[in-house]
Image 1 (cartoon, helix red, strand yellow):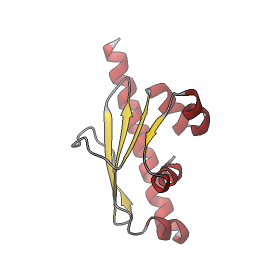
Image 2 (cartoon, helix red, strand yellow; image 1 turned 120 degrees about the horizontal axis):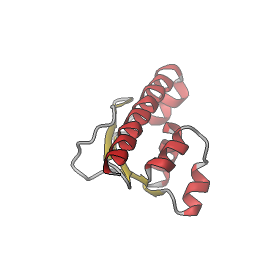
Image 3 (cartoon, rainbow, N blue to C red; image 1 turned 90 degrees about the vertical axis):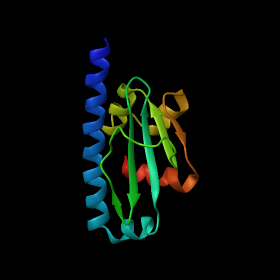
Image 4 (cartoon, one colour; image 1 turned 45 degrees about the horizontal axis):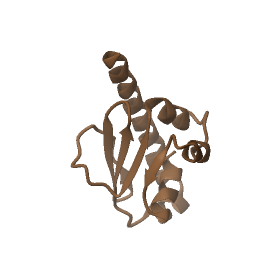
Length: 120
């Protein structure tokens, strides 16, 4: 079972970094989005309840790849199982539904929550 959890967490990491590529492309191609996040420097943690924590940093209009190393202190923290995160990333589940069911926990300010919406 432990190996299955590790395989799932690796998949989440790959999915997250795929979203990083999409997010950075949007920033590059959409002046409105670039203006919205200009000057926003944030640390982000995606905490997989049945796997690893993934950390990234948004700085200078670029989101870094997620990695499993970080200092633990972040501006935005999202917590969910690998199954829920996979469903959110693939858009087979809405973040609002997951949040209302208690499957998704978000620790962030309102503006940061809007930023997360752009990421996912």
